[in-house]
Amino acid sequence: MTFDPTAPSSSLGASLAAAVDSLHADQVRFLGELVKVPSDNPPGDCLPHADRAAVLLEALGFTVERHPVPDALVQANGMISATNLVIRERFGEGPVVALNAHGDVVAPGDGWTHAPYGADIVDGVMYGRGVAVSKSDFATYAYALLALKQAGATLKGTVELHLTYDEEAGGSIGPKWLLDEGISKPDYAVSAGFSYQVVTAHNGCLHLEITVSGKSAHAARPDTGHDALEAATTLMGALYGLRDTLSQTKSQVTGIDTPTLVIGLISGGINTNVVPDKVTFRLDRRMIPEENAAEVQAEIETLLTETAKGMEGITLDIRRIMLAVPFGPVPGSDRLAEAFQTAAEAAMGEPVPTVGVPLYTDARHYSEAGIPTVLYGAGPHSLLEANGHRADEKLVLEDLRKATLAVGSALATLLA
Image 1 (tube, rainbow, N blue to C red):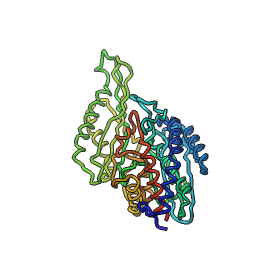
Image 2: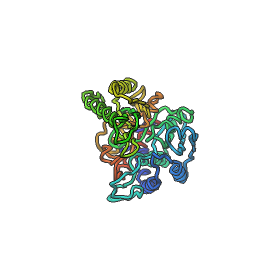
Image 3: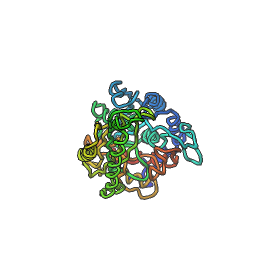
Image 4: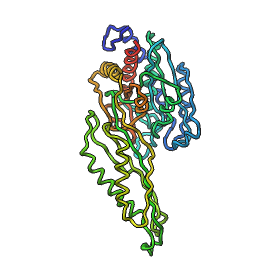
């Protein structure tokens, strides 16, 4: 059958909407239980959350595959523990659609007026770390699939849930590992997103660590040393000069503006009365889809090397910490984007554009493998509105309900 989610007479559409409504209260409780289990990354000890999520999903009647990542690989990616969860619901012969959300979160930080892991609900809004990014989509995807089953949908294909735990560390032992190990071979992929836009492209990101080495000396005789902090200050000044030129480069993708550069961490020195012998800092360079990652890294390395020339006793070590390539459409993406845009507009009751976003996600791993991919899930119009990665992260629970209906409707279209 061909499913039109905008048609009131559609028996499947009506049954699906009724199922989503009947399951919503339980869905909210499910999300609250996920928010209450910390899964900060770093440090990345995410096994307790995966265990809790698996128990909750099994209570819904799903068969949950637990795929623990080898310890050595986990540690190589700067984490303590990670187990990926996979659910497969086969309706019949046909394409496989994977829905991916990540359960790891950034640390709460300061400034909260609600308990970060309290899952408080005030005026129809749930507060908590990860409630929007992206524990919400554990709930969106699981309950969309549950509603499809409850509605008695006759479909052709398979829906998989990929619930992973390393998005904040780059995704290499989450979605990429599932694909590399042959655990999943989807025909389409959907990654966690927000309700009022279908994302078809996003920025890439390069993290570099720069270690500046000099020679320590007593503060009473600084002339006998080589000040690594003074050198680092000059190098950072050069990077900030480069940053100021990035606004001249504009992306052609709607929703993405210019590249950015941020120096986010710095450490070093021995004591107040000692000339610093070593300083380390890290930078974040966001790349628009039109940029080439190798060229971006080469530009930064050349700038730093040239700036350091003539600094007596100073040496540099430049190390790449993480590279997330930009994400964009591949053949077949149009059909996927259209299905989600149509379903989302019907569910949200307003135009839902296809856009790019100036951040990076796990979606790139599916796209790099040639799998048509979009981002869509539960959340507001923007990351800032959700307080994503900030204090008092929040989710309007009505958006969760509507997004669940949209995901279910889009799946029904793709698997009709």
